[in-house]
Image (cartoon, rainbow, N blue to C red; front, side, top):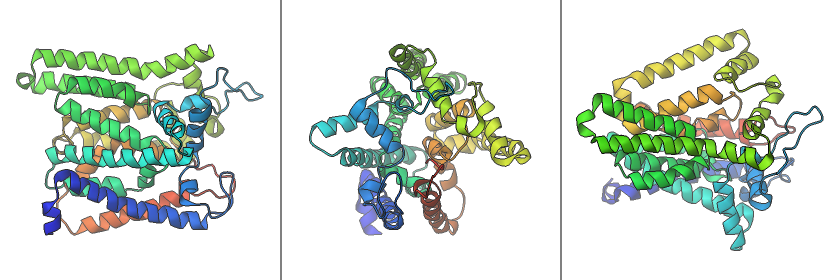
Length: 387
């Protein structure tokens, strides 16, 4: 494939991105044509309309009306769904484009599409540094995976992934000023500041323990300081919500409110969300399956081959992020989306031996998109499968 060989590395990334967007756009358009009337749209909505439902409407709310000073409550006194669950960077960018004259739906999609292209380029750059022979396939897995349509709808995911990939690249190349600038943006786009602080701590500990000669003490001190910086920004949004509403636990209570319809009121006790969710979804089998999944991830992430394929930086982030999810998340239909920042695990799949299975893997990824769009994005009646 001479044309492929002639492309610069970033051109290859954009080519894979463009091909993946053709696939996802075609699938979204097909679902739009078959979409019945629902609470968001009339029957057979346009592609733009179908791409800006679900949480996109919350981002529109934030972009146009901001955040409430008083937390809304149900008659029982429990905190109702509200905008504090949605962080400000993405909707503020949407607001800026709206003020320039764009419709909010177009503005939301422009940002999502542009950010997904940036993510593709930055992620490919990282992958080329650890698995150069398999980087293109690993990127294709990510961009064609079951939740790949999220990279072009009115959600903050693609923007967060672009900032995350940029931060990991800056960390790998010790671009400390750039990393310090990206951390607040990333932490205020999706909840990731606490996990990234832990990731920086893991990198610092690993570097001191295994690569001390390659890390000057000055860089290690900077790494520790940046971990504290990320920790502060991870706590900044809950602190701001508390000050603004006058309720110390406003943000946490808002997030816990989204799981109340499943298991009722809960306190935030690390790990209990997964236990409660496993039992709610699968009953007695749930805890056993949870143990198998967690054990399998521990085994994969503990392997040297995994760390080498991902690179220490992406490996540390994935470990930290999955630990963060284990502590705070409640498994439900949004879990597929929430796992997207662990995209670096695609490198582990990409380096598996053999080539015969790779086309089948990409076909399975596309089939996964069809399943996810039908199960989570498509709206049928009173739909509780929030994507």
